[in-house]
Length: 269
Image (cartoon, one colour):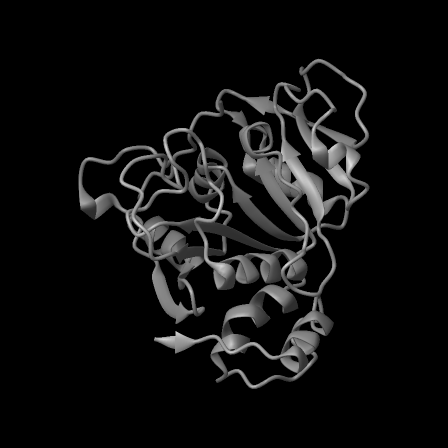
């Protein structure tokens, strides 16, 4: 198991690498570099999905309490990922339930643009991220959604039978110069990006607690046989308080395509 040992000097060099496509030389045999450098150096587009969960795969209690699932090192990892990308994406349900800030606080680094997929224009404009004076906010809404006034940029995207296609969302963000993307939640939003085959890496951080019941972090459509499960190549890291699985979903998608697997996109709620 690889151990993450982040120093202030190394973190400063990783931040300087953002968008440099590897022009800043680092020791690639260092586990910390191998984990974070591909995110920082990506120039042509990189999508990372991140889930923090318990040992039994839960991300909250039945009542919706999701605080303190990740340990301090798991939280630091998430905030490093935020600092290395250009935009963090969440679904409208995450904003309605958690009212998150989506900022970088546990480490030094820039705040990403905050993107909310609000297909039907359900947000009121009173949510904290519109009022906290933080990083810019972009709303992704369907072209036929009711038009409201927000303290945010609104990108209207075509709605298909299953909702807004994640590929169209990425194209819209790329049009704003945002190509390094972190998809942070919720479970159905992450699943839609995975099923669309656009996620490069999936980070699953597991904390040593057992909740017993509650929602899972990725709401993929059900399968009948384990032969149809996603089986990505994965590297395992110890963050300290949490264990991280770094999953290569692009290689998994290529393998599935070679076997003729039908990649489905889940319905959007």
